[in-house]
Length: 68
Image (tube, rainbow, N blue to C red):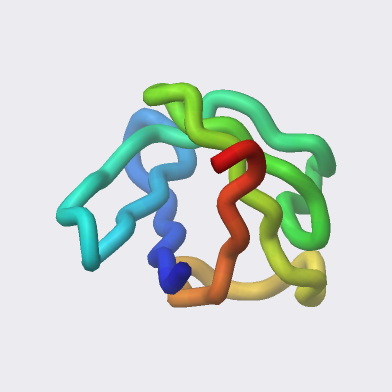
């Protein structure tokens, strides 16, 4: 699914346009974010693509939901 990741005053946030859903990222497997799993405040777990650690935000990427 296409998602947008951005940095807010509270931390990282993920937006899913098709569901009109925006949730904070509460856990991330890797400190650089990319190529690992993240967990959202609503409990969703997503796998993010491999990207350079210095990738600028906001960015739209293809993420895969884990445990659907």
